[in-house]
Length: 97
Length: 385
Image: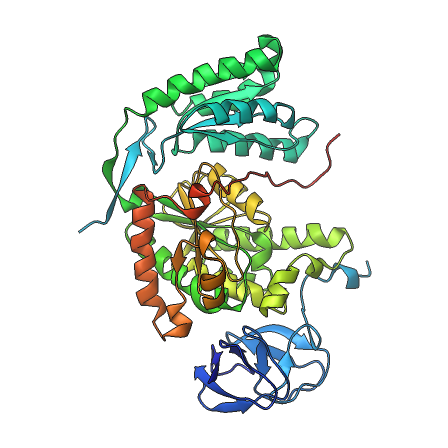
């Protein structure tokens, strides 16, 4: 069994707390949301899986707090990480002045 | 009933949890002499430093404050302060003498070189070590403890297990009248408004937000994307995506008590309760700041594994990552993996951690002490000239 923990019921991501999260694995949700989610791709221990479909520019919610925004559309069961999420803070390289 | 630990009473009223003799460098030039002295004397620890000579303004002030603060730390029974010449050495030595603890200075230029200086230092440190060994531990209330809260090599388990457990332990300590200090300013970027809500008053709230925004502005001035430095690559491999996500996890180790005071790097708390200390995020620099600010001990949570401690301030490593517990056992002091593995509560594991902290305060040594994984580095902003 592969488990994923949800820290707040508003969150749109869950965190895998077991290894073995290969594509097509059904993951059991723990914490503040119950149910299951089917992984669309391999997701390592400690990494996040999407619980909702999201467009580009959508907010990622964890601890009921915005922890980043999507840079690509993400669908339920996909890996959520630096390839499709960007920080909203600390971007000195994007400051024009 | 008041919770207690066994500590060493100091003449300035502070309580040490260790009884070392500190051999403290006043600048990088003298580090080899400092190491030679400390290597030759049982119970002596080397406090070396880089730079200082050639630093100016805020950086020089911060370096002197930190070296003096480490000398003043109650875990040091006495201090041998090693410098080149009298003026710069006494800037630090005088501030350590104010505590009433034994202090001797070794001035390499006056001694006529490193051989004579090393001999004089060994003689001074050995006399202090013998005198220190006559001290006995006595029972003190937990309110005498100042605990550093630190994380490094963070991964998702830090925010899910070890940081919330440490938060619970910090709440217990503060409920008993104790003090805790959290640092690593950049770890709060993205979560500063949420943490600021815990400030006791508007002044503390404003000071905290200013501290975080100033730090961010300083980094932005370089025109770089600081995400390359924080989260660092091992954080990212562990599953942390953004600085905001890391900040939310980091904040969990502060528990739930109000933020009572905002401190400069290596500044000592002036009251009881939860403090925030400005400081850079790398572990060696933040541990040095905590030791310089008078923390007697630190609990350091780690996800993927971090090894480093401080020579004057015992530093315990705790992890909630079962893989790290299995594969990295030599450098872990306390296992909270049952939170994720066996559905144990943060409260239960945090209470067990609190008991361990009191043991550590009473003399149980940590892996970083047993394996001598100890280093110092003082935070800096500018170049040397």
